[in-house]
Length: 318
Image (tube, rainbow, N blue to C red):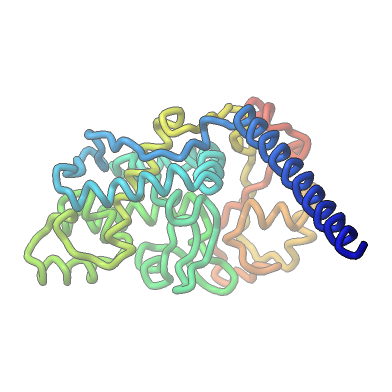
């Protein structure tokens, strides 16, 4: 009898196990079918074809050099498949390129330099661990050298128009030193002295022949990669509708040549709140402006009704 019960128990356990396995197999097959039906070609991860005509500011990337090719392949792959960062940069670029490009053109700087704030900060007013600030990531000494006001109350590294002009002045200084735009971009990352030291040590003025630190050795390749993806989004799997892009917000300027004791009250007098005042004027670092030197500042104020603009209407309201 005991033997019979033991046999029956074993048979029961076996049947239960077979049933569970069948259910699991069925579930897996169903999931596989669902995955196949819902799978988007966008997420078929595949190696990219590196275009043979890539360049920066009219200066070609020598892709016949295997080491250069592989570095270019790396940056193009990273910036293609880093979808969240690339997509957000696309959205913000639509707002900020119309501000940056005209300043570059006025100064005779190649338009490709507009991609520097894209790779530096993604068009956000960030501060690096080293203390570099704003879209263009200026360190304080260089910012002051280029004419920007930097103190505890006013920091024009956060002022997009003024910091872009300062960047142009610095680019021109670097170009006088190196004579080509690729080296200018590299020097912008590593510094004038740092790049000159390597040029002397390695006896070459060709960026692609220099052995540099990890960040600078990637820098120009990142610029070329984001340019390539931005200018050919469909080729790299990005489907972007105009309505998805961030629009310019219409503003007007208010001239201030006196002290302002309370920016919260000032904002209310402009029919906006303190948060919006600081959003449009991040270079104002305090809740007041002492302005003992009686300088003239121009404060950006969003036009009335901006809060209610949809992404479809913001551009047409200008």
